[in-house]
Length: 318
Image 1: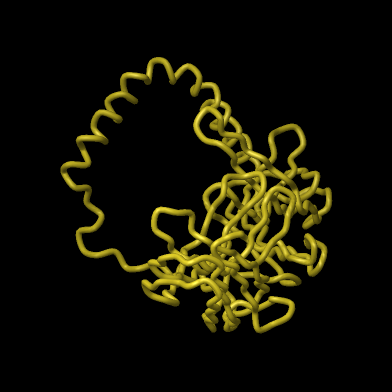
Image 2: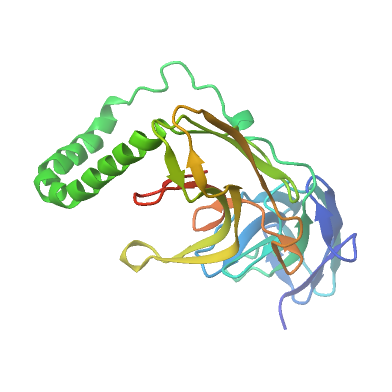
């Protein structure tokens, strides 16, 4: 028999909340054996599980009871409530799962702590803020590197310089190819600009960008296309034992311009809208929202491609 029986009961029978809701309920601890406790603690957090290394969000803790002598047969009830996080959303995928937990732990000295984790579901609620809203102004002088940092950086730079004769022959062909490709595209399309503002999007919305260029000659194209991609990227292990697992959740291509000829000197300036799925990117009822946390990522991206016959295509991914 365990030293304690712990139960966690949420105030909602389905244990389902939306971002920004109050998560509340009752935790109960039934003492089975006399023991000394250094306190009873409640915590709540999210963590990943699946193919990748486990990532855990910030753990929020609350002390429910202080040091005490617990007597067999006693039962303690602890009401709890806290504001749920706005993200990440609960997700059940192929390689990645994201779940939210409430945990009760009885601190027992010199013994294994009795504890219990109970899972609750988090759905979309209050929208997250743009990353730009979260950026803090750097303090004056914060950009300079402290002198002692050069003790580490200096030797690294020196080692890289000494390795250049070995690295350069491998890198040079890729560099030359990139330059030739850029030159061939520029001769036909001129400078190509893809202008994209920061956006927070939801299912059923549209991702927007603007494509601009002015052809330097009559240019035949096989088309201009936008490819919407959603991928799970899970990393397991580390160092030489690191493995990356990728799973395509969604992959869709839409045609922006059909096959044809773009006339010399005629500016191409078009706003491109890529519609996002409403309900097609679901796993067990959970939408695949963007998520980035070390070893586990859900990446949304759009590749804009100008298909040029006879030479490498121009493309850019956002």
